[in-house]
Picture (tube, rainbow, N blue to C red):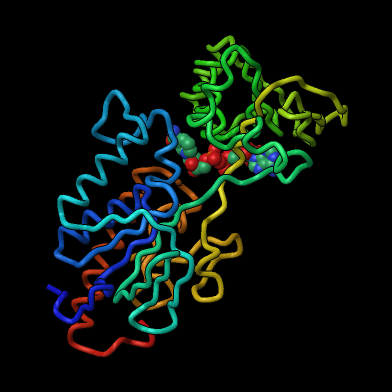
Length: 321
Ligand code: NAP
């Protein structure tokens, strides 16, 4: 219904990001009849797609793998004519309207934009971490766990991700050490109970990893006990880092309002500081980074996009809300 003025590379809405937020936005925008393009980023699916089993997304009582859920959401978006293109956005121009979106190979314009670029794993920032990425340091147990059959691995962190992924790693590893900086896990009780019932998992309390050690591959870490100050070495072949996320907002810095931690600031209608630009999912969610909340905000961003475009039919692009 909004397509009449569009050139081939101009869309009603471009969605950046293909996690649950972006895909849900594409389902809603496509179903509303908007000319919708979703640019996936380097990989399809975002962080949820690398999750072995998602147990708390409604409708799947036995759980579902992250990549299967991603496939189903994509299929649903395409059924409603949303175009899904695997491409990485390199630049956006949100200061002119229609907005500009550039990828390595294409240049687009869009009358509305939905930012769903998600968040990426936080790094420890310690010696050896960067050097051994791909050679023992990993941020994705689902991707790399298989390489640690009968080996010892370390998981850093005490939140839901660390504990879930530690449990997953026990399928392969002989021992999984969870190194946590406090004496209590942050993870949900149900996950903590599973950890206590798993004899392959050992928790190293009150400790941080200060250095990743190795030659061609990781062979251990230096630890520091924060209560006693004692320094020790722990032997292991893999280090999986799960200490939270950072919002993927580098593309938008300087153009859109971000909070002090770099998350996009949205109001209750997913609106950002720029008219016609909405944000959904982990890129704007600091409290409850879940598939279900990503889907909810993705849906709302698309509905608000539809409303914005309908209003735009009758007036010029507004400078302010
Ligand atoms: P998180 O909940 O923020 O937990 C991060 C963990 O890393 C905390 O235990 C924290 O310690 C520790 N940590 C932070 N910085 C550290 C540092 N520099 N050195 C050592 N340890 C550090 O992050 P997450 O586990 O990645 O989860 C992110 C979001 O996704 C959360 O909202 C989570 O609930 C959600 N999630 C949910 C599920 C599920 O529902 N099944 C699964 C995965 C993720 P402290 O505890 O001392 O702060």
